[in-house]
Amino acid sequence: MSKMILFLAGYLCIYGTVHLYFLVKARRAYYLQGVGYGLLAAVLLFLMLAPLQGRLLEAQGYVWPAVAVTWIGFLWMGFLFLFLCLSLPLDIYHLLIGAGQRLTGSDWTGWMLSRRQSLGIATTIAIVLMGYGAFEAYQVETRTIVLPSKKIAPSSGRVRIVQISDLHLGIMTFPGRLTPVLEAIRQAKPDVLVSTGDLIDGTVFGKEKIAANLNGLAAPMGKYAVTGNHVYYMNTEEAQAFIESAGFTLLSDRSITIRQLITIAGVGAPAKRASGEKAMRTEAAILENAPDQVFRLLLKHRPVIDEGSRGKFDLQLSGHTHQGQIFPFGFLVFLRYPLRQGLNRITTDSHIYVSRGTGTWGPPVRLLTPPEITVIDIVPRP
Image (cartoon, rainbow, N blue to C red; front, side):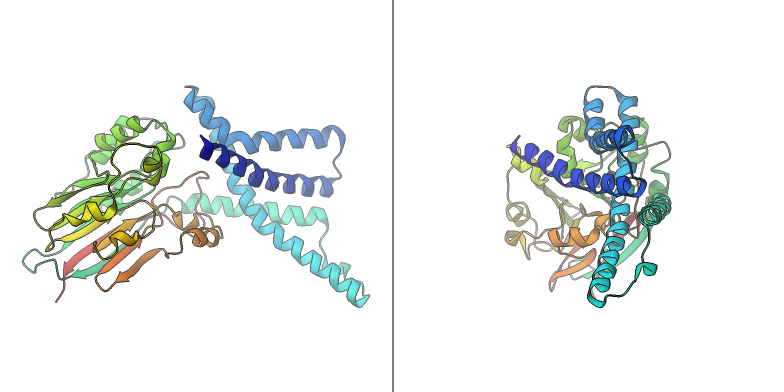
């Protein structure tokens, strides 16, 4: 409960400040006052609270109002972030021009934009970028990584792992959303299909059909999943039931060895550990019983390395960061999760791969961070 209160306080403080910034910019550009100013403030208050309102409506069973409010709220969130990234540099530019005028005593007003022009430029470019980002969010890329390992015998040949992550199937998922993802997975022809968290994130329309489509994907050596932090923001049992109905074996703080060729271990999301649920095994304990001669694959939602498990796995697959999802938010994400997106070497024979994610959270937009499915070919080392 205390964490939720802190989250809400942080959300209202940060997001509220950005809305206040937009309100001041609009008021000064159009000289708003009285009824017009109050109406704009009320609209901005609604938009600021819309994502929270959508969650509340969804929890109370008002599905269609929740859909409408959620879409409005998250589209606005994406626009406002881009507006802020464009408008702040213009403000800094004008501050520098003003400082130059005072220092030199010259008139540089010809180099300045009016308040209305500045607001219009930032708004127009933000809308254009939103449109492009909405298009990019559904251009799923297939990234292929080849990883040699001495634990794969030449007689075994290649083991192909396909990773999806952060699909965030939820109330904003619409029919056909998964079509490019499913097709990319089919074309990859995985031996093993894994989901590294946040497969589901709330109410899903037609979830039986979606689960059946995922269940129908061929993976001769199995499909495996771990939970992400968003699973614990909803009905946990319902989320786990969906993951299993989609054909995935849920690895929650346990491991499984397949054909004495590969051991797949899964770590539960930190939210689970904080919730007091049973199953609190450490990563090292999960991995230590795996046969030494088999390739050890660790599935973990967040891209962090546990010091106790360092050197105990051959490859860790993670997601969570979305690489920021909307540029330039990735720079802030990097401060919290410094492992770069893609393949990172941990030790001589140990790596972590951080996925950009296959879906979107919040705004249905990705800008300069296209979604991906990842194909990892584990091959014998010569």
